Amino acid sequence: MDSSPQTHLKALHQLHLQLHELKQQLERGPKLVKARQNAVLQKQTELDAQREKQKQLRMAADKKSLNLKTNEAKIVELGVKLNQAASNREFDIFRSQIQADKMANSVLEDEILDALEQVDASQTAIKTLEQELATCKSEESRVANEVAQKQAGLKSSIASLEGKIAVEEKILPGDVLIVYRRLVGAHGAGALAEVNNKVCSSCYVQLPPQTLVVLKSGQLLFCKTCGRLLYPGDDD
Picture (cartoon, rainbow, N blue to C red):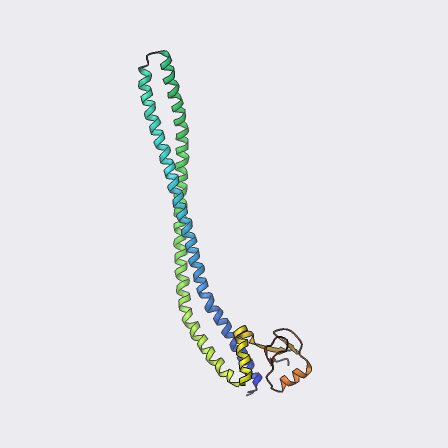
């Protein structure tokens, strides 16, 4: 079994790549839950706004209904005055007022009908939003449970990989280890780069022939262009 430094570096790089993927999955979980929570909040806001709209529509309809009743009572009073008119002039005045109030009531009746239709439409919209909110809450709960279940497994897998990485890192000399860890802190899995067809897979710069010779001899090298820790790929 080949135990050259390059073999260890390739294995180390693969472990880092797996670790990077698992950490991304771990980070995605809470983001998915947060997105579902935001969806619930948004739908709740829409529902609250629709309920307030219905309240205002109902108040407007009630106000028009009150105005209609007031005008109807006024017409009754004017009818009494009309029958008690002392002169033709008074009779004409009361009759004109009654006609005007009846016309106003006709308009009010149409407005009340329209207002009640808007109230009904608003109530329908409220029911729809309530159903959508219930769906959003159910989806939030489902995603939160799934994420919670996966998080434990991901954390366990991450811990296992970190242990394997620590073992592979033991082949690195102290001076190389210091630079390598700084690279890992800055670039994660990108701290290492495979060399394929004489090209660094990180910066895509072709390596000088002498560098390739030294790399193939088993020495640990950092790319002079991007600084990554290099190891030869299958093509090299």
